Image (cartoon, rainbow, N blue to C red; front, side):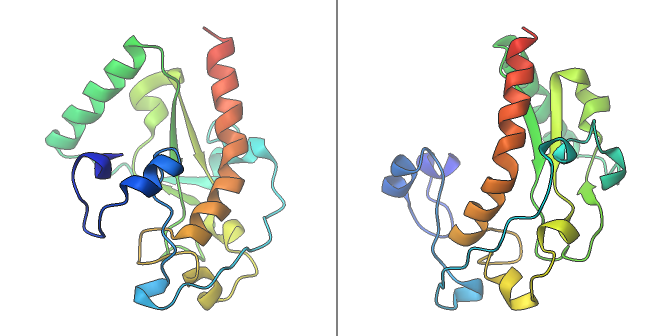
Amino acid sequence: MLSLIRENGIGTYKNSCEKNCGTIVLSKGWQNEPFQFFAPKLPDLKTDDLFFSNNGAAFAVSNDELDSYQMHFLKSNMALLKLYKVPVVFMHFPELIEPGFEQVALRSNWLKMFGKDVDILGIPPKIAFGGMTKDQIKSLYYDDFHLNANGGEYISKIMIPGVIDAYRKATNSQ
């Protein structure tokens, strides 16, 4: 969404964002290689297993502290979201450096910080990337941290059922 206000480093995608509900869908290959479509098979996974609250053993919390600047804006945004009763879900998408990780790497335990008003979703990278070669995994990214169109589609198909469940839970409890 920020790219709608100011141009980001990879160009302006205003028309793309409008067509894709605010999402940048980038058909760009790994490290400027030509983009090739790749749609991996989805992992066999129950939606409940995406939730930290249901499957804590699948998550590793490092408790790295946010700096005061980051913490200020996070708390301010969370207060605003709470004021307007907006359901909040923290999601961790696997990064390219994590394919063998058996746990979802969390920077903080957002539940401890913000209470039961938030959910945490993630998929262990070893499950997300299970059975894929290094080149297949790279075909989901355009750099070390950012998903391309393949990766966005793949991760969305995995995570959206959890987001929908979290939303239903949050809106039914209000």
